Image 1 (cartoon, rainbow, N blue to C red):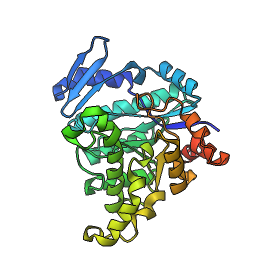
Image 2 (image 1 turned 90 degrees about the vertical axis):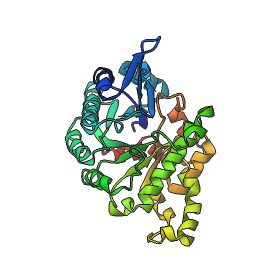
Image 3 (image 1 turned 180 degrees about the horizontal axis):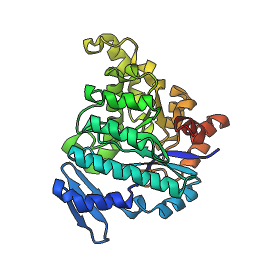
Image 4 (image 1 turned 45 degrees about the horizontal axis):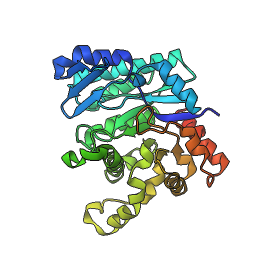
Length: 327
């Protein structure tokens, strides 16, 4: 069975060049650092485009060293939501076409999770329809919020509806996490902000009725759901005592298995507990490659879970992802 990593980020070179060449007319500030890497700055986002995020032969070597067969490639910060709608749509189109080319060049190694211009949901739906026909596109990638709009906003419902209709799973990822200036030290934006973002997104989808409105929609939470699984008891209690949640017809814990979760916890015991909590069939292998906060050996992480049955470890390393991605 192929070992599939569902949480792996990549920038097509032509996408980076588009940002550099056309971005300045939309307020993007770009420069090259002393190592020749493009540095991009837009309001609230700054990104250095490292070669390991771009070069596919480098990526293949990393995958081989990690014993990973397939990467489901996805866009990461700054994504495209900050851009005016038309430019955001163009960025998404160029990115998705890059995914298709990567798949065509290495059909057994790379799949694509499409980027969408969520700041303009009508354009996002059009891009889903277009991108779903491209070679290798097997899902959709989406931030945990869209320029501070949570995912339960009514405007996003048509996007979720089309993903459900086309059987395209949605993979979430933190973006510009909460916390502001208090999170600037010690890399807290990542260490605390990212797991919190995942919980906010999951809560919005549950409490906002999205998971009820689209019962066949598959949503994958990164970083093992962040703080969401450990908060579920608190959410259940709040559901029983708070007027703000009186609209709920089921406790939040009833939705735990509506989501899938990647394996990124950096703690074997926490990952084992998650598997026990949600079921091995709801967990998929992820690495966050090639970030410094990534697993460099995601297969080994799963293999050493000796309290998890071997058959369940196989599901987590590839079987569950193959089902989700319709392989």
